[in-house]
Amino acid sequence: MSAFPQEDLIKQWTSEQASLKQQLVEGDMEEWQRAPDFKGLERVGGVDLSFIKGDDTNACAQLVVLSFPELELIYEDTQMVTLSAPYIAGFLAFRETPCLLEALQRLQRTQPKLLPQVIFVDGNGLFHYREFGVACHLGVLSGLPCIGVAKNLLQVQGVTRSEEHMSQIGALKKGGDTFPLTAASGRVLGKALRSSDKSTKPIYVSVGHRISLDTAVRLTHACCRYRVPEPIRQADVRSREYLRTQFPSVDTCG
DNA sequence: GCGACAG
DNA sequence: ATCTTGTCGC
Image (tube, rainbow, N blue to C red; front, side, top):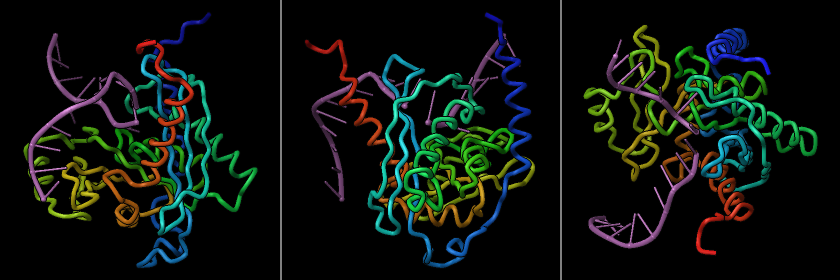
């Protein structure tokens, strides 16, 4: 077998990100994105992968489509997949995007009218080392509007978990409150959002594709029943439930 | 060399 | 990502 140093892989992936980035579209492109109440938006999607404890190559890939604004499940796709790429911070898309695109293609092929008008992705969009996170990657390759939502802060481009950052989190008083994630360049790459009155820890929202940051934040807030926006939360809950029933732990009492 | 490292 | 139950509080 030929050796393929991680160094080479990273070089290849870096140039691929730069190439795909040229197709990235920022800003609102649909009428519903401009509407105060998102009139015209009927379907929101969410994707996620879940793993079995000691196995990092086999995973359960999940795509859900919820009605908007009710946030009720109207479509679900659950599929066991074998991942070929390793997880490397900054290159999450190369690991997770292929199986998510396949899920979208199955939906496109069988029930195209149920395709989501926007997809919430677990991970960052523009808030990324090279401003091209997994939400941008999936957006460009699918052509669909995407929003990146990270549950943990990626310390990038000068944004750190500093006293200043902690202080800004403390200043988020109610659901919907935000503060910008500003790169050293001065560019706002995303926003920290207190997603509900009850949750203290913010989520980090950034543009994936074909949507503006303000619209992404506003819609994310509108989709939060709990800390994590419902489309992603449903995808997470359902993929884990699938693994729990299909692959029960082997080493637990009998 | 040290620390950071979405999922 | 996963490891993990009960517990404290509203």
